[in-house]
Length: 280
Ligand code: AMP
Image 1 (cartoon, rainbow, N blue to C red):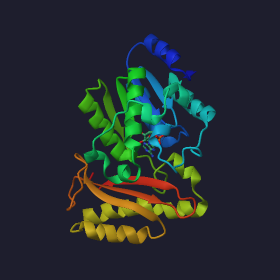
Image 2 (cartoon, protein in one colour; image 1 turned 120 degrees about the vertical axis):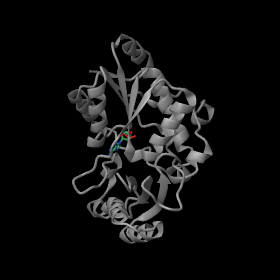
Image 3 (cartoon, rainbow, N blue to C red; image 1 turned 180 degrees about the horizontal axis):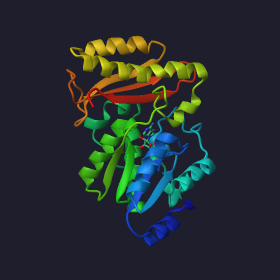
């Protein structure tokens, strides 16, 4: 496995590869959620590239860019043991020659960013799409793997690929959870012991919502009330219901409903997201 930190060398190594290329874009601090994407990519491609890059242009002012966990050595070991061919871990200056307001960006439309995470994180998805497009160009990947944990991100990337005719297949991967259902996230490292218990109420709300829906006759209002009660120790940013195929907000829930939650923990102010399909 090669660890590459510059674009020139990456391009040279990509040229040498034979067969298909699978790309797994990450910000590092790899956990079993990332590993599930990597394993799928290794199973489905001749070569796998994992990018590890804490992308500054997708962070808003006041967010956790500086304290985001960085552990390249450990991440590289996980990649090596998983059969990855190339880890691409560039410095910020290698990826961006200029600052954000002087870069050509890919900006998804308001119809998809003016809701959910895009609402509180202005410009976040411009940063995500722009870095992902660069990685698609650099790696010439045939497939790229994204987690359903970041459901809005996955939807927006799929749209970008359709809208701009990228020649790549986007492979969605299911959410990986701890035994107690907490969705794995690099940001879980921030949580105190007490906060971890409190954070469990996010997935609990979602699984409760699904159970209640499957039992029948539940309204959106009833699910919201139940969830907010469960999450009373969290600062809930949103609990939203969208059609899984269009990401349009729903007034009435149905078998296509995706329920999404973002909430902050009370001590470390860690922002966590999770989601569930009511029917699957
Ligand atoms: P990140 O490093 O947080 O930017 O995530 C990189 C990729 O891993 C994204 O496509 C995420 O959706 C995916 N991912 C993160 N956590 C999980 C998880 N718990 N289960 C599945 N995929 C995940």
